[in-house]
Amino acid sequence: MDQGIELIKLGARRITEALDFVEGTHSVLARQYKKERLGWNLYYDTLTAIEDALKRGDRFAQGLRNKARSIIDGCMLGSKQEVSTSSSSGR
Image (cartoon, rainbow, N blue to C red; front, side, top):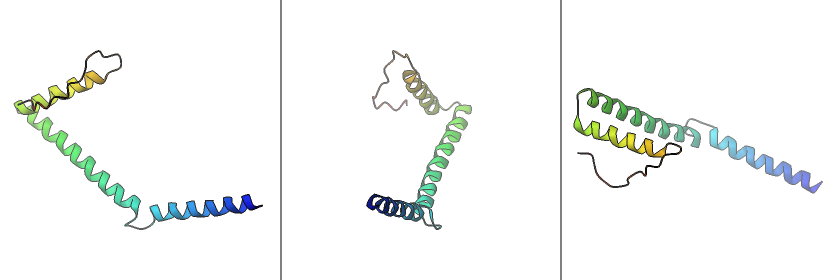
């Protein structure tokens, strides 16, 4: 019987914590969503800017593309290429 009561208390505590996490417009969940949304917007804005720069033949953008391809190629399964961690900017 004591185990049953402890289980109910534990469940009630977990439900309360879950509700606190999701309730309201300023909930932890809402704040996290806004932060992640801003991050993804920045990511896609950056990709668009690089894509536009590549269309104009921008050398810096070409260097970024080459570096990204090198990193991705080094991550492919079975790749023998090591990814360089040097701080060259591609300029």
